[in-house]
Length: 311
Image (tube, rainbow, N blue to C red; front, side, top):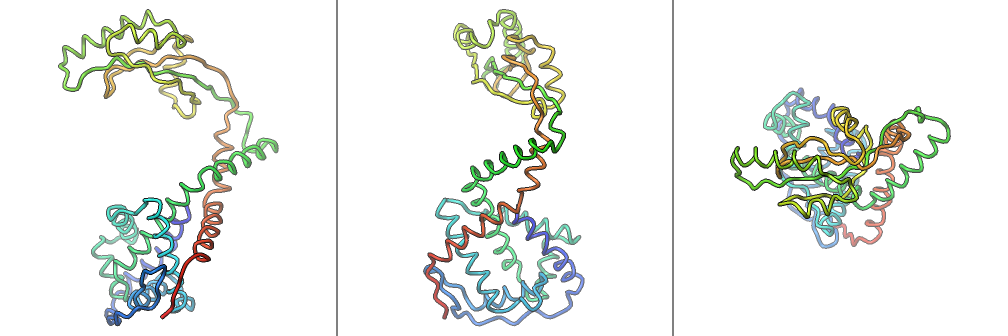
């Protein structure tokens, strides 16, 4: 996603900052209001701190007061819009991302914070940027998920028509139903053993997927879940090897799960074209580019509606 890419681009500059952290801390800025965005202020001290961050992250001549203001305005708009949808980046998520950056520069979070602080950038300044980008990425993914999926399908179809990605590879598609013999929490080993034997005994009487619900209704505390369809690639070799040994309409042997003992009914099994290679290629082709393009359009809309007052 584009957020991770932006953060990754900061790493070389941050590493350099740690190596060169011999400058004194920048003097505190006056706490005057520089910009008001939809009623929310941006302080001049925030602008000064963001200028320092832009310089540290390789902004060079682009690390101007105007550029810092625009970035802070955009962040305000991103965070406001995300909050409108009930989305925020938690302190734990931001701290984890900050720690990850520190780790890549071979420092602890405290060492990293001190290093960038000696270049005039507080840890909170960087964390504010990380948090805004993080919640914005989540919002864009959620809001435009259907569009991304549609584009992905179009790209896959185009690749398949061109014969890209070895589209002739085969896979197996399974339609399955989970049958669970429920075991109460805190059940003893003796109760678990008895329940497993009940599942084994019922397995031989299973009438097939069409009669699964009636089958469960005649038994004590047995749940049958809705059918699901999965490819062999999604299920993994270990499970597909087990499923391939079960006849259509049969059940796997009972396995202990959190709810009790589970058996899987094989309702249907058929060969399909494996599009996993095509799907991966499509995701790479769309990837962050599609998200970035959509995010830029979205942000432009927010800017056009915003009330921004420069002081």
